[in-house]
Length: 117
Ligand SMILES: [Zn+2]
Image (cartoon, rainbow, N blue to C red; front, side):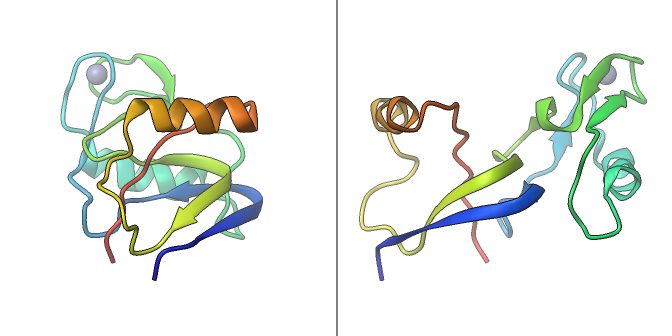
């Protein structure tokens, strides 16, 4: 109930929205790339399940980008640290001002991933 955890991840991990997953699109041309994405993730993953190089070439329009920059329909992304709150007592998503305050505090950019499992 409430509270939060800080995950200090030993390497770069993919933070996914669980049951909230709604697919992924090309950030350049907007094509649905979900089928390609699964293979791309398998290719990019290291044997331990973490990630190192994220650079990819889009199958749809040949754009050069990276897996963290894709247009995840429900937010997802790669992280080394994760602030995790379970059963939050406030409305989600957190308002931009709250995210900004956390970013200022931590000195890094944050991405809010709302996961359901
Ligand atoms: Zn594209």
